Image 1 (cartoon, helix red, strand yellow):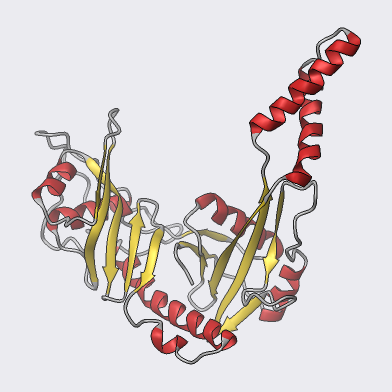
Image 2 (cartoon, helix red, strand yellow):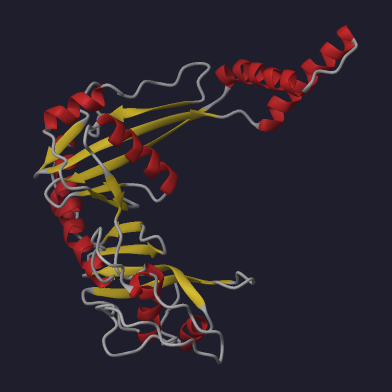
Length: 339
């Protein structure tokens, strides 16, 4: 159901009934793209039923779905049409079209070509946990998540959201886990990682399907390369790739997590079971992950020095000690390599 996640915090004070959300989303229900449109965006039934409800509640967890349909015409095709039309104008009038006229010709060419263009469809599931005040976008693309949350904020009066922020930045925490090989309680380090240098070299090292419990990985971190992606497994039930922006990608529910929910279930029952199991697992995983990253940053509170983590040391040289800050709950007594 969810393959990628971006988590938002819903600001206090917002409340709405399921009926109110249904009515609000109905004002921007998805409609197929028109002949000369480049993009169509709107809300569609998460169960996939024609004219179905736009917001579903399963065990108190709300699910909605944003549909996007786009058309694109290759720029080379548009430019060729513009050049052909500009040549015709020059031949008939003896003058070359100026910049403004060429822009108009480009718009005309695009409008003429769009009806022939192929369409591309995509959809993003949204999970709203009203009790925990979390909004989860089922995408790994920040731009698409921003588009989705903007549409929701515009549709639902009083709704305000912000990306979930933790006391310890994900790269600093991931570096600690790799160097100490002591992941936080309930998590284990899997076999994928990406490390990037912060200096001018922008050097990148990637490991795939490879043990990360090796000296080479620790040396890369000690030399200043910071983790931007790290594969983790939570409670032997869910595997995922944590990114530097605290996105969860390649989310996979392991072994028999879904089997009981799907066994002998029809379409509707299967949807309800999938939602119940996915949100049930993630409702436990996310708080554990936030705790491993030092907990949530409380708006208005003094920022912790651990929020960004100290800068990594250059090879053979350690920086001055950073101001005292709340340590990562996963670090134990083992210092970071640059401390």
